[in-house]
Length: 479
Image (cartoon, one colour):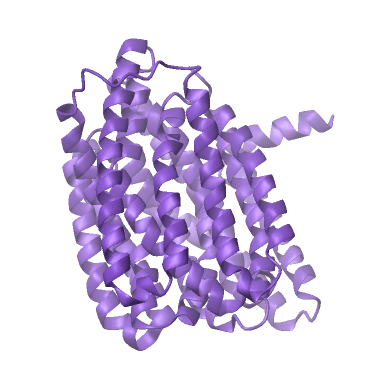
C-alpha cells in the first residue's frame, strides 16, 4: 500500500502547480479578454459543468471507493471498472441529448452556440478521463506527472494564441483541449493496468449508490455552480466576471486542501473495511489540525488584502470583485471541515442517504437565497448565498457524523485558533492601512510575516506532527 504522505505530496504538487499556472494565465487572460468576455466564458462553463455533473452523477466517488476496495483482486477490479464506466456512458449520452435540446430552445444558450459546442466536446472527453480509476488505485504519481506536462502546454498555448478581446472562444477551446489530451493519455495508459471487457454486466449493484451520490452532487451544485448560472440569467455577464474572479483564489486554495481529502478517501474506505475505527478517528483529528493550520493564515491574508489580490489577479475594471471575495474566503474553513465530515467520514462509511439529506437541505437553502438575494444584490448576493448554504450543510453533516461515530465539532481547537489569529490579523490591518509600498511587496511582506507566525505556532505551541515532520525533512535536506 502506497504512503499517504507520498500520495498527498504528489496531489499537493499537482494542486500547487494548478495554483501557479492559473496565476500565470488568468491575470493575462482577464486583461486581454476583459471582464465581459471572461464572464461569458465562465457562464457557459458553469452550464457545461452542470451537465458534466449529470453525466458523471456519483461515478467519481463510487469509482474511487470501489476501485480502492477491489484493487488487490484483478478480476474484481476489472469487473468494477466495466460496470462503472458503462453506467457513466449511459448518463453521458442522456446529458448530451438534454443539453443539445436546451441549446436550440433556450435563446441565451443559442446565442453562445459556438462556446456550447466546445462545451459538448468537454463533456464527451470528461467521460474518457477516468481519473477516478487512477485515484482508486492510488496512482497519484502518474496523475501528477501527466497533468503537469499538459498544464505546461496549456499555459504556453494561452500566451501564444490568445492575443485580443475577441479570442475568448479560442481561450475556452484551449481549456477544453486540455481535457481532451488528459482523456487520451488516461485511456491509453489504462490498457497497461487492466483488460477492459464489455460483457457480463452487473449494473444493479452500483446503480443505486451512483444515483444517490449523483443526486447529492447535483443538489450540492445548487448552492455552488448554480450561483454562477443564476447570476448569468438574473444579472449580466459582467457580474459573472466579478463573481468568478472573486472566487478564483478561493477555488484554487481549497483545491490544495481537497488534494488531501481526495487522497484520504480510498485510505479511509480501507480502514473502515478492515474495522480499524481507532485509526480512522485518529486520522480525522489530524485532518482537523491540518485544516485549521492551513485555512486561518489564508483567510487572514485574503480578506484583509482582497483589493491588492484582485488588482494583481485581474487588473483594473474588476473592483466589483473585492467585496464578494471578502465574503467568500472564510468558506475555506467551512467547506474544508465539511469535506472532512463528508469525504473522510460519511462517504467511507457508506452513509449515502445521510449525504443526500445534507445536499437536499443545502440545495433548498441555496435556491431560496438565490431567488431572494441575487436579483437585487447580484455578485454580492451570490457570495452570501454560497456562504450561508455551506454553513447550513456543515451543521447537518456534523449531526450525522456525531450520530454514527461520536466525533464532535472541535470547539476547543477552533476557539484556540481564533484567539491565535487575532495578533497577525491586527498587524496585517495595520500594514494594510499605514504602510505605503508597492502592492506586490505589501502582499509578500504580509504573507511572509503570517507564514512565519503560523509556522512557529504550529511547531512550538500546537506541536502539529505533520508540520514538524515536513520542517525537519526540509532542514535535513539543507544540511
